[in-house]
Image 1 (cartoon, one colour):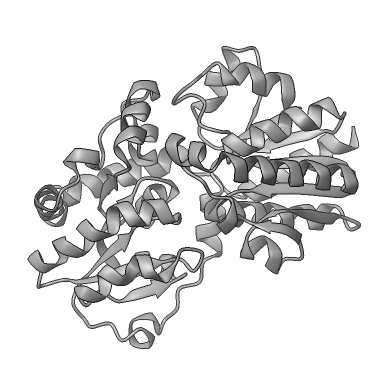
Image 2 (cartoon, rainbow, N blue to C red):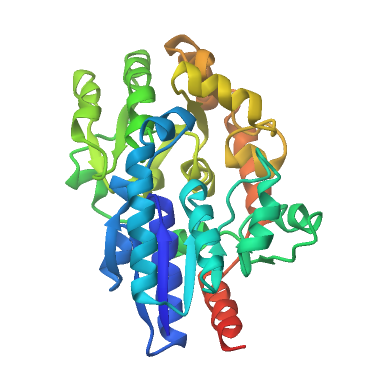
Length: 366
């Protein structure tokens, strides 16, 4: 069968690649084409567009880049029609993929959605459009099945694919030596995988390091982001390690993490963290009006309580980060670790990519 897969960011690229590996086991004649990143390309997907060109985040950023986005949508739609896949598999990336879902439905193409858009956080009415346009939805958060049920839409809960990614991770035993790190305990800085995220948070991350001389700060960089955005780390003698995030978390004592998938990854590695998020003025105030959930980090959303502190927008200052990081290192550490273990017990799943691939392949044979 022919599969067309669209992932619009680093985490989606990783999860899509693991799904593809499992689909290949079940479908020996499978062909894959799509939009994504290095991980998808490594396993043989014919990549039409890399996500580094298409990862627009936030209302204002999207608005400014609308001409470019429409150009990408037009290109993607044409490519799908030319390819005529047996199924279009959409991975998160709501703003782009929901439009593709509508297009695919109009043209009679079967559509699966792997990792639901966070429609439960804002604009819940989009669930009706998903029910209309998406043939099968595969959700990774335990409360999403109940959410969709209120719209009379049956979805498959498969568990979180991060467990697959972490289970496959093999630590580098020479990580510290190869990266010339000292024996001081490490505070990991994870400023995000999009340029806008990094630009807005990395300055404060760098500034706070001078208050913790007993620790070494290490920044997790990603190659899809311009290296210029990490220059502030050099000012504070903070090494930047590209595409070694799991190795870094594996040895970290604590972390400062931009809100996103990385907050849950950090929790699963049992590294106490402070979550941060900052955007431009207009974007923040629009988001504040439309977001309908009490937290922004996956850790707190899943636990349904504040496990880790979130420093958002005006609260994200060097002074506040210094204070909260001290709390994480000392007073709050043990309680965070207890809450992490409870969180892991709540969502622990095995073979998520395998389960998703099995379901998808069986649905396609019907």
